[in-house]
Length: 155
Length: 155
DNA sequence: GTTTATACGTGATAGTATAACATCGCAAGA
DNA sequence: TCTTGCGATGTTATACTATCACGTATAAAC
Ligand SMILES: [Zn+2]
Ligand SMILES: [Zn+2]
Ligand SMILES: [Zn+2]
Ligand SMILES: [Zn+2]
Image 1 (tube, rainbow over the protein chains, first blue to last red):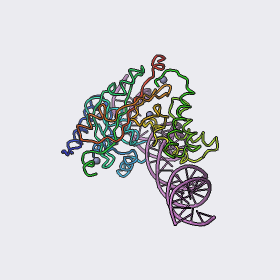
Image 2: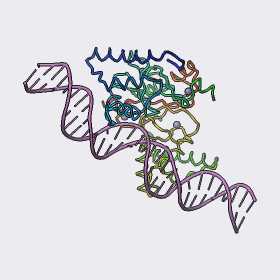
Image 3: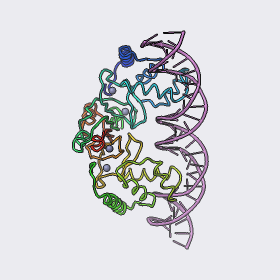
């Protein structure tokens, strides 16, 4: 994906289509709330916080209480359509909707755009430290905060 | 540090001594609240949440409102005596009190112990993705969740 | 049609963090 | 000495994030 411009309608359509396919294959319910939340997340390459999502759902009459948003987000995260960005307490659509992976994020603190890269859970300093210590890695958080190319130039 | 047993009194004494030295050199105020919070964090190789710290401060008459704890934690984090563990919304004493570094954490989900490793901010998949994208990294979060050797054996 | 599992509606509450403003104490400078 | 500025604290209130608990609705499975 990266920070470059692109035809963004494709991101949304492809993301929804992939989720539909995945859910159909597994008899999972891709309900209106879940679909709508994924559309919101796909709507821009930035993360959204749970209460921003809840506000929009409320405006659309799709639910008004926090659990509605959190349940939809839990579903999307559990099935890999979205990821949680720990540094921001926020959520973002997955950019690699095909395979299960350990995401890594570049977070621009100026324009708030976030790009996702794939990473090997056992790689890097975390993997090295884990092997040295005898630690069994189940999940990793890798996030870098800084400036995207556009914002770095502007600065 | 790693998950092995060790004489833990040294961790506390050394950590406090290093902070005292650092603050004295820079004319920073190592106040009673700040010292006490650092002692709490050094007290075990687990992270503490802000409100656990606040509760203990309150019990000792050192402050009763959230800002007291958060200000002390901000100070300790800013000067590198402690780190924030994003995955846990919690704080932990730094295990390498000497130099400024990019911490990486191994977090045991069973016993809650956390060990810190040092890492290069520009290394790994985050660094690679950043170079590819032209992204300027200012800070990284690297955290692995899983089982420490003791808990993995017990499982 | 009944059972069973899954999703949703809703109110309450727990947990995390900051804003805003008053006060206090110390130390640099008049 | 005075005062002025600064960093640290005290305190109230509030914003933001997340989950529990329990009841209802829906839909697949039998
Ligand atoms: Zn992804
Ligand atoms: Zn940017
Ligand atoms: Zn450290
Ligand atoms: Zn353990």
